[in-house]
Image (cartoon, rainbow, N blue to C red; front, side, top):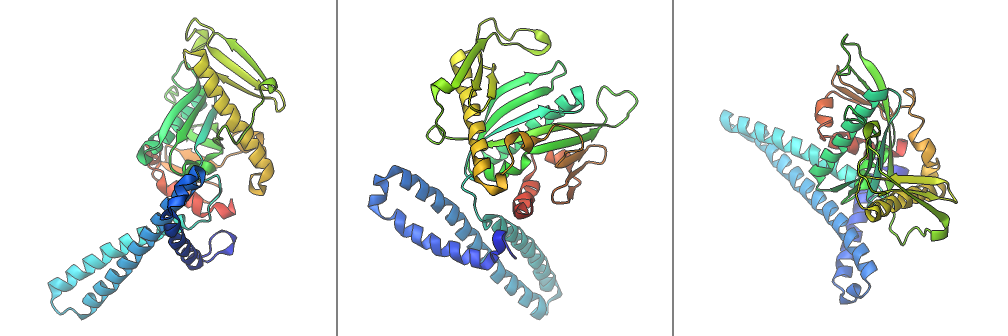
Length: 357
């Protein structure tokens, strides 16, 4: 199998195992802890390489067990023992395939951004209330997937509708390799289903836009105070009602880029400002990363599209329980499970196909 850039899977594995040996020696050096930044980076690399080495070792052990089971199936004279050997062989082959798929994902050449935490923005596009409701469904899908991975989840800002949907919701996800797993969620998500308000049973098509922004550290993006315009105001809720009666909502405008961020979910103006700055920093970081990397050449505005139904990366068809990712021609008939956060197969397939996206 060839990975990105034409790298052979076996060559990539041998290279990583060699590096694993080198890193093992590095972490045994007492001088490493004196440089905390280098120590953290080395330990991150060691954690990744350890997983590769353990997975490769487990796969080798399974291959040996499979060979032994095949010999037993071929040579065993006792019919009952032969049948037991066949069942064991089948189970081992399933485990080997799972291990092989896991190793393929681990061997994908890593992007420096892969380990980043993210800020995700979901906005209702074409479809009115139904689009807003689906934005809420997508939010729950990502939050449930995050829970299965042990990731931390924090809502940054919301704009709710009276029916319980979201015109917009912004949240952060932090944990191990968050950006690596969710980076390809950016784009337009199209939903086809019968809205709960539709008496005739007619299927409606709506669209939601998603943006995935790698979260930048304060040291990575310098934002000058004089480049900011900060406005405070009273927070508002759905239908014009007030969320609270203090001037706690914050809107920050970055004058050089024109990027504007609004946060109102917290009752504290200070907390809203802190969240707004995190979102602003992530948007600026994404903008600069897009200019720097050829595969991320499009600006953030183009990344999410206009919200029109025709610009879609994925379709969620509820009547058929079908999800189709149009970029890699992947169709899965388990939409109910995916919406509950069971999306590992989807995200792993996207990672394996990332060189074609």
